[in-house]
Length: 262
Image (cartoon, helix red, strand yellow):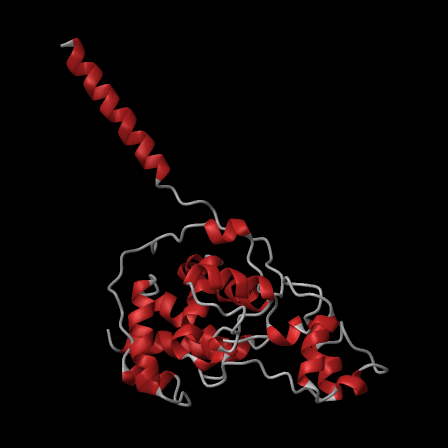
């Protein structure tokens, strides 16, 4: 009799430990910096499953036509999106809508896979006022390579302005992966050498999409998508709220589409 009681007690103890082990850690509210440089801790963090079990959603051609009518090569993107998003746990209405909205804004509807840095003098002062003033802006205006080398110098793993790292590792892919550190980390994760061949991120749609998914998971963005906190999600990606209204428009349109077909 005693041995049976001990067995039941042991089983209860094991069950309690397993139950505690499955608790998800709280999301850190610490602001990620604007350089898209996730920390080592972020890259090791495991994505939590959706808080509620929901039916897996597939992207359809009708969805792309209605939510992203200006997207080119829709059939090609459709195959890539359905293959890769399902494979990487971006399969609920909220996750798909958040991911697609952010990527659509960053890449101009998946059409611009490399960062446009052709800024006028006025735009430099408005967008990059931290790096330019009225005396320096004229020298850099409409010179994308010089602009990139200045604004991305000495951060995100890049060297000084003279090294040219800012231009080499400017934003590419559907979420505009930026900075040498991110290029190195993505290369190691995906086994695709974008450090020595950075244009793979804009010349290959598959690599462009994979880099966005890698960034998404590295920064645990499914959790923010599940919570519905779109502003915090934007801040993680952008470092601020640039283009928030445009991002929100895509997000609302995507959710509306899924609600209509229920």
